[in-house]
Image 1 (tube, rainbow, N blue to C red):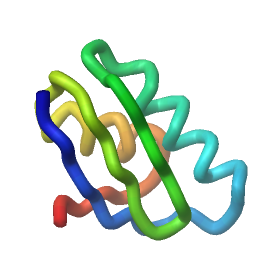
Image 2: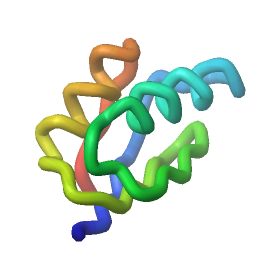
Image 3: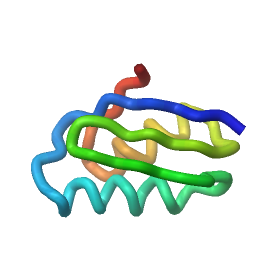
Length: 65
């Protein structure tokens, strides 16, 4: 199991935060997700590329720390 930290860009409100949380929680292998307007912390058995793709598909940018 891995833990990832991402810098998030484009989130301006709680609706954005919830959209990213929903996108990340929909991935298989996710154990926990914490999202703020600036960053996300994810724990689980999932590839970082899949995490970034999920955030981008939600309409935002994710940059690994």
